[in-house]
Image (cartoon, rainbow, N blue to C red; front, side, top):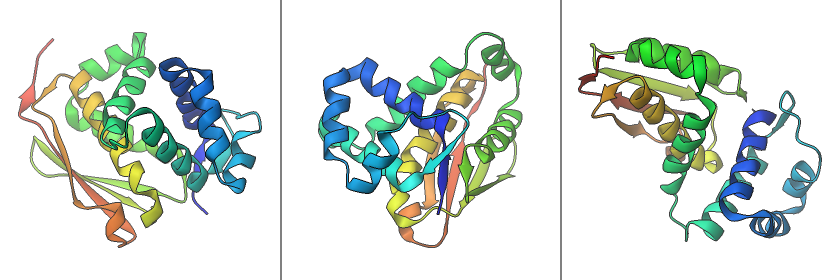
Length: 190
């Protein structure tokens, strides 16, 4: 079973409540399946691990209820969470780093957020990288959008311009891995 770190779950719950209110969060919770409710009815601890399947079901309901089913809103919403997380010294650290440094650093961080999923970064020149995630299953396809949002926002904060992130192999292709191709046109100097 693939698991996700509690800090991601708690940040997502907090974002729903701040963006849409406690009543929408309760509506999402009420519509979860029995197994997922068990996950969300407990106190979510930042350092604990929770089933990724339950988290994805939470995201699906959030998108249905608050974004009229527009799954691409996950890219924007993840970017907003990343921007909020990267404050102070961390934001400066990302701004000063090269896009390659940022990609490699984030890949290390992502390893600590997923249990049962690995990531490998392959740089292809100075403005392109292929990020391979291994371990996601087809029902985790929404995670692909959150990953795009995460990397796009982090690279934009680092000063990368013209950031594009698209899958050459998507999670829903069912190959046991997905390849995210990330490109950018340059870096703004600070």
